[in-house]
Amino acid sequence: MALSDRKKIAIAEIRELPNLVSLSRMALTPVIIYCLRLNSDRGTLAAVILMVVAGLSDFLDGYLARRMNKFTELGLVLDPLADKIFAIGLIIGLIFLRGFPLWLAVLIIARDLAIVIVGLIIVRRRGLIAPSNTFGKYYFASLAGLIFSYVINFGFGQSLFHYLVVILLAATAIDYTIYAIHIFQKGSEAIAAPARPYRWSLIAVAAFVVIIYCYRLLTDLFGVTF
Image 1: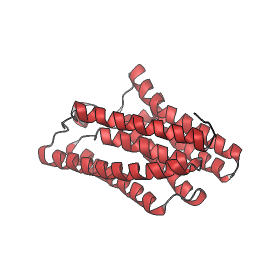
Image 2: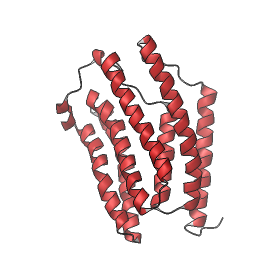
Image 3: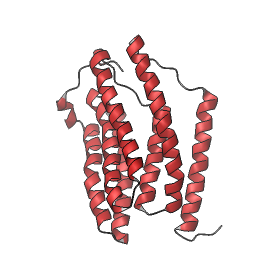
């Protein structure tokens, strides 16, 4: 999206309700970490509930922006930034509280920092805000699954999402690099959308992962038998 086509980013836009919802997602991070520090079943349950609230806020800010016609340049930046700060904050807390792998945390943080830095350069030089892409959405969903698995100490989920996060992290890094090169060379934000069979293949794999994850969650943690 070109900034020249719309007004510049204004700090005053932070008062818009969708942007306040995005900010609330960041504010929940230290509260969730505090709940985990309690090291109790109630603390873990509270952390899970707050994570669900944070997840709902990620949908709510976009819904409110569409419903109220409150699309702002700040919102386009703040929404993904809130996701990154929320995830990274929880990961840092989980390193100390749940044994989250340091090497994986470094990769995740380095990837996000690189995307933020390159994104700022694109905004400054080309006046464009990099849009989210398919790989990025699946990556963040997998990262959320990994974080959730560490919060509830679900070993199978940790192992499963370790692989998915690393694979999708590499895929998003390559995809974003191609996009950045495209922008710097041609000065256009247009980029080809993935082919329909490719998109449906990703959806099928995602559905399979969700089914396996839920099945093992019910059988391993809750003792449900089928």
